[in-house]
Structure formats: C-alpha cells, structure tokens
Image (cartoon, rainbow, N blue to C red; front, side, top):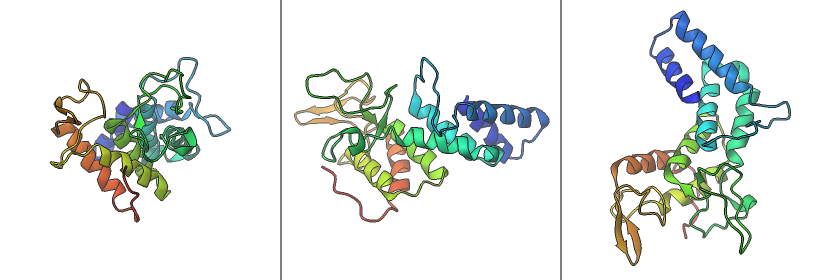
Length: 214
C-alpha cells in the first residue's frame, strides 16, 4: 500500500492531479495513518508485517509528503517503529560486529540472541533495507547524527575494494553476482547494490566524525 501511495504522490508532484488520483492518495494515507496508536506506537496486527522495514520506510515517506501533512503524529510513530529496528547497542549489538548499524527483514525486533539460543529468521542487516530506512529517516527530518553514523558503518562493510558493493555478508545466494573468493570470503560487486550503496553514503557521508569500521 505505501508503495502504491508513494507512486501516486510522485504522479501528483509531476502535475497529474485529477480527482481519482487525489482521492486514492487521501484514502491511502488515512489507511496508513490508522496503524498508529494514541501512545505513538504502531499496531501491526496479530500477524505483523512480512517486511516491516520496507513497510515502515515507505509509510514514513508517504506520510511525509504534502498530501499526508495532516498525519504527522502517525508519521512520527512509523519513524519510531523504524528506528527501533536498527541493529545497535540498544538491541545488544556491538560496533565491531558485522550486523551492527543496519536494518534487515526480521519480522520482530532484531535483538541480539543470547548465547546458545536460536536467532529469529532474517535477523541480519542487508544493504537494501538499510538504504530504504535511511532515505525515509532523511525525508522525515531525523537529525540524530548517531543514527546515520551507525548506518554508515554497515554500508562501508558492504563496499568492496573495487568500489562496488555487495548486498549482505556470508551469503553467496543472496549476493546475486556470487562469491569472489572463499578464503577470505568475498563477494563480487554488482550494479543494483552499488547504486544502493552510493545512495546510502550520499545520506550518511555529510555527517561529521565518521566512526571507525571494524
């Protein structure tokens, strides 16, 4: 739904403003705003969201648009929902860990598992989800430098020596260009992830005092 709403908002911005599109946008932003509760949290329902970071990031973008300006409180609830899913110290992750600083596809809050316990599925950070989150936070006006500096640490771990980027660590299957070497484990750079990496760094690099990447 937020993907469709943001597409219609892009059409609106391009000058396509007929009653059908305007009504569709209005209904869409109202529907997204209804997920926000009065206490500033998001009610994802009994089944949750399949891809919570994508859903939240696109909802933030939709509700940050001029056509969603009546729903700022709901937008801020989505922002909090997104920030709560960054893999940082508050969830038990350390700066020198490869997961640190990014976002991923986990359906639940991605807390670092205790020793000898199972991790929830898709807990790891990946480049695509991280860039979606960063763009949404930037659009919403989030100014906390630490959010961006932590994300930059993850982005730089995804950059190869040739300047290109890979999607995720430790997974040859999801890195679509495949494995470059097994010892040390390296992945080939490829186009779509490199575009994502550059977009991410364009957001994080203006932040002063970058942290050291482990």
